[in-house]
Image (cartoon, rainbow, N blue to C red; front, side, top):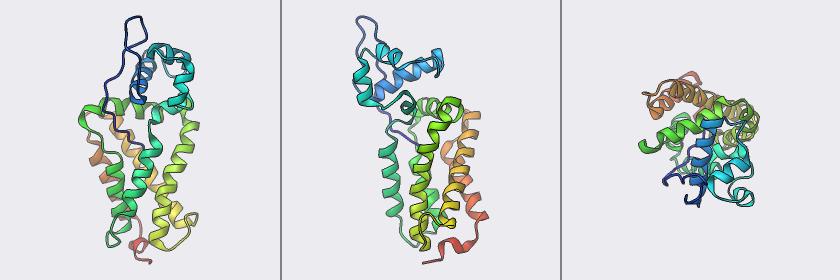
Length: 210
């Protein structure tokens, strides 16, 4: 799943006298406000640009499309997870290494939890974003499959690495769904528990192949 560090305050809308959105994060926050008010499908790129006080061309410097807004800086975070996995010592069992990287990838500062909830509600629960999410999830699985392949001595497209990648994504989505349904739940605990359960279900031999 995706995690984006958000450290700036949202810019106000585009009415006279309001400050223009000057960063990717500010533009996200403006868009999230419109999505909550009008709905994702009824909000247009022009609506977002106008509310942010920027031009349509400027909007596309930040995001390729409206569908990309909920994903934030996903590619950068995905690369961070790849680096995190590669840095894990080989003596750490495969599923433990994936679990630790997954929890780290999805760590959210307490002040940013409301924004992250909005982000994941859009990604997981807006029908118009489901198809778009398929490509992002495929890229996410590829990182896990690459790591599993390196640990098991197989190709990334072999059955075992692919099975692990698909399974980890499945339990991560399940943990996120539980988190969205329970405002008091701890996302890190849910993800940690979900992957522990998955690791117990896999045969011990997954991490023993060199």
